[in-house]
Every structure is written in structure tokens, then in C-alpha cells.
Image (cartoon, rainbow, N blue to C red):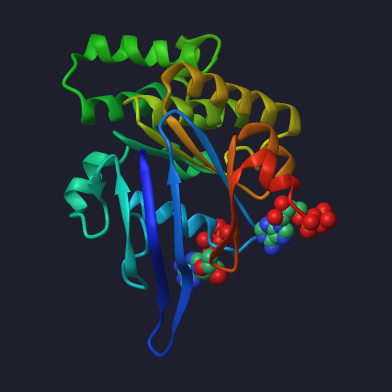
Length: 245
Ligand code: ADP
Ligand code: ADP
């Protein structure tokens, strides 16, 4: 078991009131698997993934109880320093909007290099070679052109591929993909999902895929977690869950 979330409850508060956002959720993610979280807007999908990433807004949220075990390590209460070395390294995340992760004023190649520099001690030449290799892996043709381009000089689908290259640069064990294709054209969506699937097969990392699109989920994920109003209402093999009345 790669990730084991157990009886996790999270609340958000302002001065006067505290609201339960996640209510006693439990689920597991196996190694080498694809699991989707589905549910309508506001059901708690993003909060669940942010809690695994250690990125909950600290001032207004509180983990009330429960545990999050990643690869045998308890993440609840982990220091920010330890979390930082885990993030991008063992757990990576991609978002709906690639520009939320890309720096508009930095060449794409340099942004990926930055990650490798932070987490490895390879030489500059080795790092650059790895970045070009990664661009091939995410099927970005003309990897030299992309390397030198600023984000606004490439398409939305290409930006998403650069983001995926950044996410997989350090060979994470878990990739959290929060609506990674929602902002893209339908044809590009399919390409990106196919790419994620083939990378998953090759690297054997696990993917936690967040989506509101049930047809995409049933095609992409073998396991599904259905959330409603901060609770898990169903979970299991995707075919079985979607068949149940
Ligand atoms: P339809 O509205 O197309 O008839 P259903 O309402 O039966 O479809 O739901 C289809 C799928 O969506 C089911 O697998 C169900 O578990 C899931 N689902 C239904 N309502 C919600 C909800 N509020 N949040 C998350 N998933 C839901
Ligand atoms: P989803 O990803 O399924 O759309 P979220 O996990 O983003 O849902 O949100 C779950 C609940 O948490 C929602 O009711 C939302 O209103 C609340 N919420 C999310 N972010 C905040 C925030 N920064 N402050 C207060 N409430 C929030």
C-alpha cells in the first residue's frame, strides 16, 4: 500500500464558525495503480489531495483527526521542511491550469532544470540532457525549441506536457492530477490522458486522478472514490462502482 488515509476529518474556520469539510474519510492507494476521485463541485476532492500534499491553507484549516500514511511515513504533523523534500520528489502534483505551476518569465527548459537541481546533484550538462530526455518522454517534438521557449510561446497542450515533465522529473511514487485536462480541447484531453497512462505503465508510479467527468474516469482509472459533501459515499473497482444502482 502506497497511501493509506484513515478516518481523516478536516475543518475550515473563520473567527466565529468552524465547518467540517472532510468527514471521516478512509481510502487506500496501491502501488502501480490509477485511482480517481469523482464528485460534484465542492464535494471535497481538492481538499483531499491538498491534505496529502501538505498544502492545506494553514491559517483557516485544521486536521481534526485521522492519519495519512505515505509509503510507511505518517504525514499528519510532518514538519514543513520534511514535506518540502517529499513534494516534487516522492509526491508530485499537476493542476488544471498549467500556468499555476509555470513561471511566465522563465524558459520552459530552465523550469524543469530547477526541479532537478533542487533534488539531485547532477552537473549542468547532465541536467540539461535529462530535461531534453523528459521532453521526449512527454512527446514534445522539437525538444530544443520547447527548452528555449517561454510558456506563452507554446500551446496549452504543450504547457501541460511541460508541467508533466516537471512532475515526473524526480520519478515520484505518487502523481496527483487535479482535473489535468479540464481546460484543454477534447482532442488534446485524450492525448494528455493517453500520455499519463503510458507514463504510468512505464514508471509504475501511482496516479490519483481528480475529475468531475465520469466518462473520462471510467476509461482512465481502475479504481474510483466517489465523494459527496465531504464524505466518501462509494469506492472500489471502477466498473463495479459505476454499475451499481
Ligand atoms: P445520472 O444523473 O446520469 O442518471 P447518476 O445520478 O445515477 O447519473 O450518477 C451517475 C454516477 O455519478 C454514479 O456512479 C454516482 O455514484 C455518481 N454520483 C451521483 N451523484 C453524485 C454526487 N453528488 N457526487 C458525486 N458522484 C455522484
Ligand atoms: P472540490 O474539489 O470537490 O470541488 P473542494 O475540496 O475544493 O471541493 O472543497 C470542499 C469544501 O471546502 C467546499 O465546501 C468548499 O466551499 C470548502 N473550501 C475549499 N477551500 C476553502 C477555503 N479556502 N476556505 C473555506 N472553505 C473552503
